[in-house]
Length: 92
Picture (cartoon, rainbow, N blue to C red):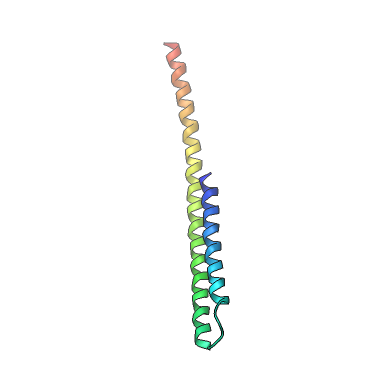
């Protein structure tokens, strides 16, 4: 379903962000403390952004699931109304 696809897509983006952050942090040479501190700050910022995006993604998935449930109920109601309509047509 759409929710599963978005979850997989979101997880893929999250993994890419984490890998990039890991590469940036591990690729830094320890020549001076300032460089390491900047990279650490960037890494922490990316991790925070990643956590925020995961939370937003979870909220969207909840909304999608709620809408899918509404859609199922509406489809069932539509089917029932169509059946009643055809029964009435047969009776006329």
